[in-house]
Length: 109
Image (tube, rainbow, N blue to C red; front, top):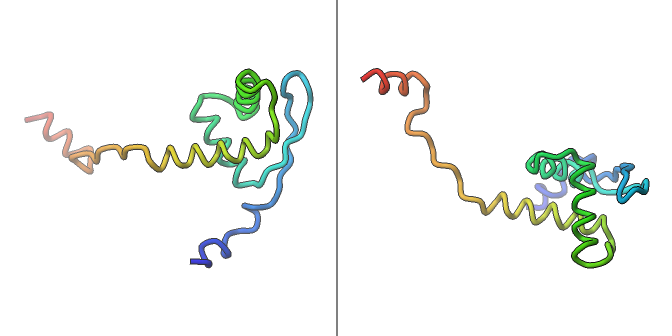
């Protein structure tokens, strides 16, 4: 089991710092590369750029709690929530036919 975790590419847990504009202020956020990759997926799933997604999340937390404490940790936990939701989502039904030609044959009948 440890090989799964210990054998991962070191680049996935290497820190990356990204500069963003949040609430009208320029700031830097430092996360592991793997978390940035997941945040990119979340943003795409929401139909937003990464910058817009992070800004919207920051604004919503500010509105709900009046302050944003430890935003980098909030982003990491958001990634975990997203992965849990994806993992527990119902799987799409398998198509009856594996090839388009079968569908064409059925339509012709």
